[in-house]
Every structure is written in structure tokens, then in C-alpha cells.
View 1 (cartoon, one colour):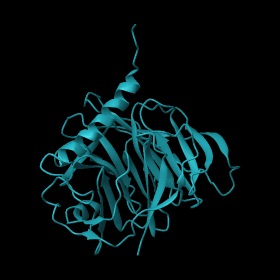
View 2 (tube, rainbow, N blue to C red):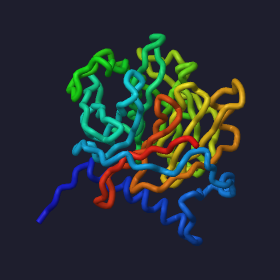
View 3 (tube, rainbow, N blue to C red):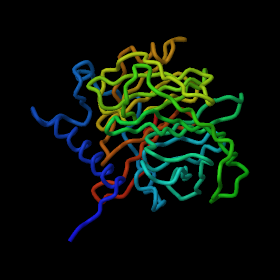
Length: 318
């Protein structure tokens, strides 16, 4: 008997195997605790208690959000959180409450989902208008010619009928390549609210790479993401800049790292300094992180794994 396996299924299996392989690598010379990383530049740092350990906000009540790969806290109505599925699904964003209740689906007009891996919310072309960014930047086999970040104004969730089903118009596509000419797998983007610059962090290198798409991004022609610096982490799956632009979170499968500005340094200069490691309890396949609009807490969310329920967690500032 012959069985057919879809390309999407193969991609999901590969990602889960890679995540498991990453964890097995940590045990090759004796297992480490979840607060340790594989890179010697950050291995010896103590875990900060700047934020509490995780608190469960409840199970996600959106049955078809089973590959959550991005997360963003609404700016128009902070009781809501945005998310999306991984590769191959509909080009849509899911809306939920902070208790995980299904609050709607919003299709991005004219977009496609080749391999959506992260999302962000922040400033953009119109002052005072929050924008949603959906990052089609995944490339497990490093074979894509270019990548796309979709940008669309966030709808006003204070007046929308919830739960809602809607198509978001006015979607802009920022198509880009990396300036070093290489195809790269990436799963993390963030938007600087002070400059509207977009940052992309690669995933699979032993020490990942930070790139920038400076504002105003080119939506008419192929844009170029400029290489800024190497970061001493691997398997980075998510990142976010706080709403005031002063703090940064970057996570991989085992850790969450935190930076806080001491002055007016750029995001690149900030990430060139040593981070704090925050308390983090490993999730089955944790690929999402997002600041709350108040900057007093942040959320994490995992793809479904090991037949466990998908739980939305928050970590609160002490």
C-alpha cells in the first residue's frame, strides 16, 4: 500500500525533529538545565529574577491554531492577542483574548503563507497608527530566492464586532533578500517603535545574525536586509521590542534573553551588550514571544506538541 505525505507534513516533521535534535545536543556531554544555552559566551550567566516564572492564562480555544509561530499584543485594545499558524496555511491572523478565547480570524488580502514564522506589531508609514507585520521568512532548506514581510494597519478592536471574520485590505508586501546573497532560515522579527526599522534574526547558525530593513522599506521593488552583527545564540525562534523601544526579548527553544537600554543606544548597539537570562520553562515547541502593550509582562506560546494542550503563558515583571 502506498501512502502520500504532503510537503507541509514533511516540513512539520522536520521542524519537530530539529527541535528534538537541538535538545539532544545539549545532553551529549551531560544534560543541562533549561536555563542554560549551548553558547559559551552566555552559558555562565545567572538567571535573572527581573520577571516571574510563567503563569498559565489558559488553553488556546482555537482548534485550528495548532502551529502557533508568532504572537503580538494588540495596541488598539490590549485585552487581545494576535497569532498565526506556521507554513502552508491560510494567510490569516487569529485573534484571541488573554484567556485564549477565540475572537476572530483576519485574512490578509493578497498575501500568501509560504512559511510564516513570526509576527510583530509596531509603528509604520502613518504616524499614530499601529501596524501588524507577518513574516514569511522561514526556509528550512535555505532554497528560497527571497522573503516577504507583510504589513497592514491593525484594525480598531474597540469598535469591531467580536468574534469577527474579516479581510484586511491595504496590505503591503516588503519583499527582500539578505545583503550577503545567502538564503537563510529565520523565525524572528521585531519592529523598533521609534524608527519603524524592521529587524530579522536568523535561526540555524552556531551564532545567529541580526539584519535590518531600515525605514522606509521598499514595497515597490526588491529590498535588501543589511547585516548588522553576529549574536552569540543559536536556534532563535522569536523576538520582540517593547512598545517604548527600550527593551528587547529574544528566545530560542530553551531560553529567553533580555536587554534594557541605558541611554539612547540603537537596537544593534544594545544587542552588542551582554543580556540577562530570564526565568523560562521550556514548552513543547516554543516559537512565540510578545511584549504586552504595557511592557509590564510578556507572553509565550508553543506549537502543539506531544499531544499536550497549547497554553498561553505570561511572565510578569517583579
